[in-house]
Image 1 (cartoon, rainbow, N blue to C red):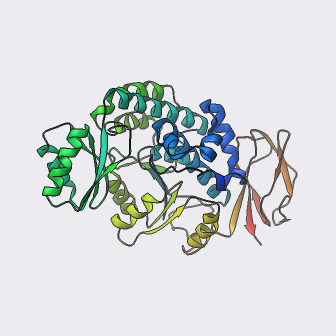
Image 2 (image 1 turned 30 degrees about the vertical axis):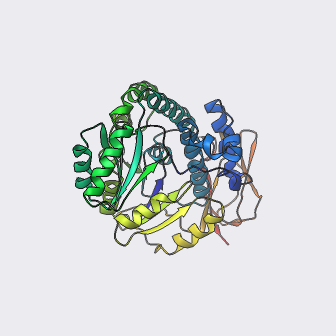
Image 3 (image 1 turned 45 degrees about the horizontal axis):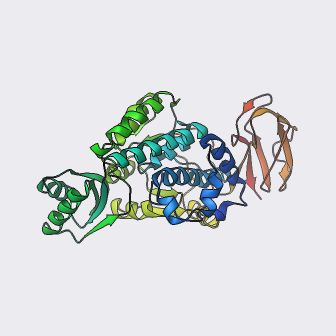
Amino acid sequence: MLAFTFPGQGSQKPGMGAAWREHESWELVEEASEHAGRDVAELLLHADAETLRDTRNAQLTTYVTSLIVLDAVARLGIEAEVCAGHSLGEYTALSASGALEFGEGVRLVSERAAAMHEAGSVRIGTMAAVLGLEDDQVEIACRLAQSEVWVANINAPGQIVIAGSPEGVAAAGEQAKALGAKKVMPLAVSGAFHTPFMEPARDRLRAALEATDLRDTDIAVVANVDSEAHRQGAQWSTLLSAQLTSPVRWKQCLLTMAAMGITRFAELGPGGVLTGMAKRTVDGARTISVATPDDLDKLLEWIAEIPAVAPPSVEGEFLFAVERLVVSPAAGIFTPIGLDDGTHIQVGTLIGHVGEAEVRSPFAGVLQSYIAVPTERVTPRQPIAWLRSL
C-alpha cells in the first residue's frame, strides 16, 4: 500500500519552481496567484532564500509546489491509499484527499501563514532540533529548563524539535546535552511554532476555518495532533486549529500508516526530509522523494516494483504504472467525441470538449474507457478518460 506525504515549512528553496515552468501542472500557479492576490510565480522562480524564509512566503510556496507535484503525479494515474503532511503539509494532504479545494486551500494557507507571522512578532520565539535522545528525555530537558520551552515536533526516533523563548530553548538545549543528546541545532525560523506562543494565531485561524468547506473523503488523512486517520470533514476544523499549539507527532503518524498496511511512502514536494524520517521510523519502508519532473520517471519505475494485485476485498479498477489518466483542462460540461473503447490514441488526439476547451490526450495509448459521462459538469484536472500505454 502507498502513502503520499507532504513537506512543511523549511523545505522551500530559491528557484524551486523553475523545473516545472514548462510542465502542464504549472497552470496551478496562475490559479494560486488569483486566489492569494500575489504573484506566486515570482516567488517560485526569483525569490531569494531570505524572502522565502518569511513564513508568509514559505508556507504559500511550499503548498503550491507540493500540489504542482501532486497534479503531475495524478496525471500519471498514480493514487495513494492514505495521505499525511508535516505541519503545513497537512493542508496539502487535505487537498490531495479532496477534503480541501485548491483555491480555498490557498486562501486558508495564506491566512494561517499571516497569523503565525503576526504571532511570532508578538511573542519572540525560536526552535531547535535535538538529536540522539528519546522522546521522554527531551520532554524532561524542557521541564528542567524551568522556562517557556516545549516539544514541538516528534519527527523520528532520536530527532525531536523543541520551541519556545530564545532563553528557554537555549536552557533546554543545555539540559538535553547533559542527558546525552548528540547535537542541538538551532533552526532558522521566525517563531515558536506548535507551542502556546501560537495561541493568537490559533484564534485567527479558527475564524478562517469556520468559513472553509472541509469535505468528507474516501482517502484517509492521518492528523498531526492525534496520529489518527480521519475521513470526516467536520473533524478537521478542530484538528487544524489545535495543530498550531500542539506538537506535530510525525513519528506516530508514520507508525499509524505502517499499522494500516502502508509499506511505501512517496514524498511529494520540495526537499526530501520526510523521506529520511520514514526510513528511520518504519522498518522495511520503501521510500521515494518526488520534487522535479525528472523524478516522475523514477516514480513510475518505483511504482512498477509494486505487484499489480488488488486486495481481494477491494472492488474496482486499479491504475498501474502502464496506465494513464487524461484530465480536464477546464471547468464546464463534458462532451466526448464518441471514441470507442480500444481506440488507439496518439499524443494530442482530441477526445472531447469541456465547454469550449478541447480535451487532448498528453499520452499515447489505448482508450480503455471514458470516465466522465456526456453532459457531466467537470472541474479542472478531473479525470476524463483512462488509457493503457502502448
